[in-house]
Image 1 (cartoon, chains in turn green, cyan):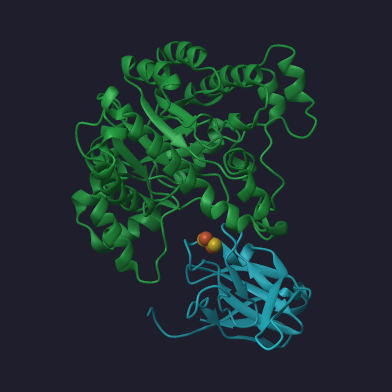
Image 2 (spheres, rainbow over the protein chains, first blue to last red; image 1 turned 90 degrees about the horizontal axis):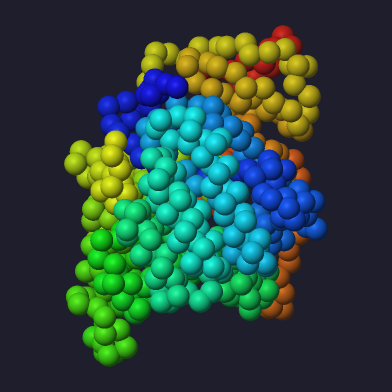
Amino acid sequence: MASTAEKTTPFADTTVVDTDVHLSIPFDELAEYCDEPYRSITKYPTYTPVHRGGWNRYMGGKIETEKQNVQTADALYEKICVEFGIDYPLINAFPVLNSVPEDDRAVELMYAYNDYLLDNFLDEYDQFLGLCTVATQEPETAAEEIDRMATEKSIEGLYLLNSGAQPPLGDPVYDVIYQAAEENGLHVAYHASAGAPFAKDFPVQDTQFNRFLENHMLAHPWAHMMTMSSLIVNGTPAKFPDLNFSFLEAGVSWVPYMMFRFNKEYSMRRSEAPLLEKSPEEYIRDQFYISTQPIGEPNDPNHLQQIIDVMGTDSLMLSTDYPHWDFDHPDALDQQVRQFGDEEARERILSGTAIEAFELSI
Amino acid sequence: MSGTAERHVVADADEIDNGERIVTQIKGREITVFRYDGDYYAYLNWCAHQGGPCGEGTLTGTSIASYDRETGEVDSYWGREGEILNCPWHGWEYDLTTGDCLSRTGVTLPSYPVEIEDGEIVVTL
Ligand code: FES
């Protein structure tokens, strides 16, 4: 397969990594990767095999439904690599496993998503990189799956859906997962989700809100705030100093709030987080990475730049979230960075930080 | 600015039915010409948000609401059917008759004069 796309985008001379590209897998195809009885359940679901709540996501047809145009490797390559100018998409299967009610079925789907991703996408193009799906319901089984997937050259990290993961992901029950990640040199990426997984963590809010806009506003930052609190208080980054973590799909503006409040709270209640050896802000800056989509849209673009400056480009990695309805076109962020940043800052956000965070050998 | 404005025939007037549109290229720009309620509108097919093909989005109505401070009542209804252009990428709404974005003050789609001359749609650009 072709190794470099013919680029006509503003990225012609720049390496670009997209840290959040999703598949949208037809469930009848995924079913073929499952053993019975899971195959039939996936093929003939009561509702949908991985339900995402009954919200009006596509505004009654005002916008395109989840774009069905990238269901093959060639189509994804054409869209992401050629049209958007991305050199290396980090692809995840978009497994919404926390809304699968049976733990054993979630585990079976974890294997299915991973094999599907490898067979149909990662094996097709050299520059396609991937994240290993992790079902957090059975941490020991997940650790074995991580060992299996880590032997695949194209797998650069783990994909953990944090919305609806119970208990929260800093709980020591998950340490086997982090241990496996560290031993295999894999990055840990958290991705949040609105709808059914959000409802698992925040059932009152999910049922009491009356519009998807309210739900979607909070689903991603709340899940990430929960995960970040849990990781830091449990000392997960201190226990696994060689691990890098990233938070996908909540933009960047929520992070300064967490860093600064965490410093304050930690100093008041240090005895509740005794494993920490430095300030929460230092852990966040040293081991946590943030993907940019959905990049905030303040009325004054200077204000976004101020947040980027607070975060520093060493923590920020471009992401599009394609093909979801709220994706960011990569040019939107690039224009912002070009307007305010120097070429070095641009290079960090477009690829340098991701290469470091995921230890990509590209 | 590139040169002086010129007239461009884009189609016969009856090629576009009411509520329909055509997308055309003029001077390297993609322009969508709409016909609505007897009038014609030409807008750049480039969304002010992130450059999506807004001229190819659905034409629908939208929710309109007002709050009466005296009675404390909200009057909310679905209206302007067919007059709201929705960008297919992320749903920014534009008023088809003015090009104004409904959610961002001061954002308006670039528009071009359209006239019907001898049964032909002429865009000046
Ligand atoms: S590009 Fe049109 S709504 Fe985003």
